[in-house]
Length: 130
Image (cartoon, rainbow, N blue to C red):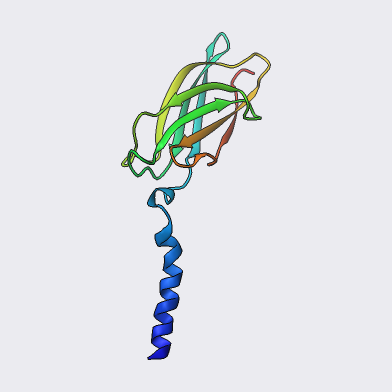
C-alpha cells in the first residue's frame, strides 16, 4: 500500500511541470522549412516562404517572416501574417519587390511567432543572378 502511494506521488510530481506550463508555450517556435526566390530585375526579388508552426489560434501563431542580412541586423523585407494557420501546416506565403543591395549575394529568411518571437529554424538563400 505504501509503495503504491509513493508511486502515485512520484507520478504526480513528474506531471506537475507540464501542467504548470502555459499551454501557449507547447507549440514551439516558427521554423522556415522552404524558400523559393526569383529575381524580378532592378535589384528586387520575390520570395515564397514555407513556414511550419503548430499554430494554436489567435493567441499563438506564426505572425510574420523576414528576409534579412546574414548577420540578422538589416531587414530587407517583411511579410506579415494576419491570422493563424491551424489547419494548414506547413504553409507558404509570398512577397514580391524586396530590394536587396547590389553587393549582397546571400540572405537569411527567418520566421516569428506571437509567443516566442524569433528563434526557430532559419534558412540561408543565395540570390539568383548574384
